[in-house]
Amino acid sequence: MNEQDFLASYNRRDFLSPLITVDAVLFTYHEEQLKVLLVKRAEHPEKGKWGLPGGFVDEVQDNCLEDTVLRKLKEKTGVIPPYIEQLCSVGNNQRDARGWSVTVCYTALIAHQVCEAHIDSVDSVIWCPINEIAQQSLAFDHHELITQARERLKQKSLYSIVPGFALPEVFTLPELQHVHEILIGKEIQKKSFRRRIEQADLLIDTGEKRAERGRPASLYRLKKASADYRFIRNLEF
Amino acid sequence: MNEQDFLASYNRRDFLSPLITVDAVLFTYHEEQLKVLLVKRAEHPEKGKWGLPGGFVDEVQDNCLEDTVLRKLKEKTGVIPPYIEQLCSVGNNQRDARGWSVTVCYTALIAHQVCEAHIDSVDSVIWCPINEIAQQSLAFDHHELITQARERLKQKSLYSIVPGFALPEVFTLPELQHVHEILIGKEIQKKSFRRRIEQADLLIDTGEKRAERGRPASLYRLKKASADYRFIRNLEF
DNA sequence: CAAATAGTGTCTGTAAGACAGTATTCC
DNA sequence: GGAATACTGTCTTACAGACACTATTTG
Image 1 (cartoon, rainbow over the protein chains, first blue to last red):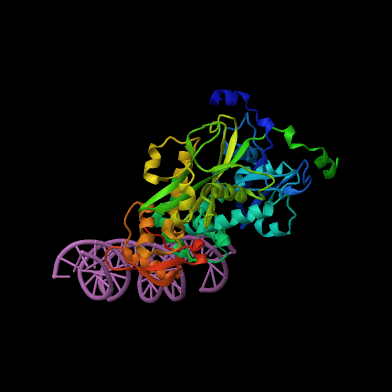
Image 2: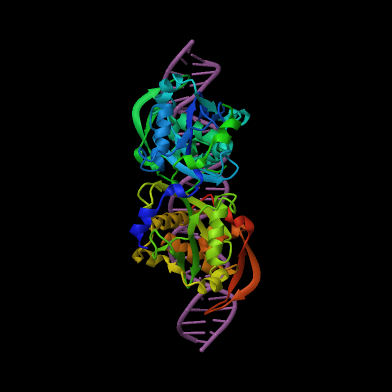
């Protein structure tokens, strides 16, 4: 049999394949906290529980896995996040009552402001502070996925400024530093932090300043390249 | 409908799900080169081409995705590699002629010696030098997977000694350095390399030495913890 | 002895840690 | 002026790069 005949006679429905879904751990920074997007499950299984946004590949709409996860996130937040990265895939026979199932999980970051209006108008979507996640009962193995995503983001905060994508488009250096501090779980010397960022030339100074209390802080914007920049020397933790 | 009824009436065969496979990029170091394990495809599609070892989840035998990939690697090499790590998942409608397909790809490392006998007795399995991969025609998107795996391993060589798992159980420091140099694509100062490894306390000195030409080199073994150790400061590249 | 390879001593350069100091706002 | 916050100066420390030097083997 040649390949053409093989393909003509091949029918995917003849084979039992694991379920495959896509999930996202979407982080934002708001009210001085890291928060994760949770969605109330409208359908079985785990109906009524909170869980990560995600779902099945739509073979017509989606050209690749990232299309699927971005489509799902857009449905929930109204917008496409500016940073997304594949985290890992988890597949086994226990995680879903329907049987052997695989999820491809992504980590994404977004500014709270840009999806605020949309999320407030949808009562099945919330931003859950990362510190309160542990008390939540979540669907499937979504606790573990969030833990892994957070751990990866912590690592990134040691050698990149990727966490900046969780901030509003325009932000101050102390805000950026604070996101990193939350992730690392300890304070960073502000001098060290500023030096790194200045030398790497990762931010655009808007020229504006913003004051809440005390001296006003300069406002910055992330350069495009900042998603990919890696410091050769890590912060300690 | 409650969850129990839902599950009782649920049948995975009612839904069309993407094909899902698992692949591995298995590296070793031999004859002063990095090599990748390739397998000649015995079945359609892409029958007769070389490709990465991998295949479908066996829902009975495999408890998780890693079980699947380790089972496949064991079939091809006769042994379980001492280092394995999930690389990424790739899913789209173009990579496999059978339709929308997802692969979960792993990077693994093994000592050449431990699978030598087994592989030499199987004519459909070869170690292909990494420099000759580009000239090979490979199945599916396996070229890209190998490129990504190599890139990841290069990054690891800057801040870990994970590449050491591609060496024999007992090896010399110049050998370990050479693997890193191949991956990074440039020479490393031997003083720097030795200092890092000594300070991190990652190796066990066997007390033995081995000479080929010149002064004999001390022989070392990797400590268990060396798979997870990360230097806080990277080598330059 | 020379050639070859393993391994060390030591200087320089760079960037992070520590922390005290100054600057700019509001009241 | 004082409180609060932003930002800087500068010393110390850790560690990678560079490279010349010594050590141990074979022939």
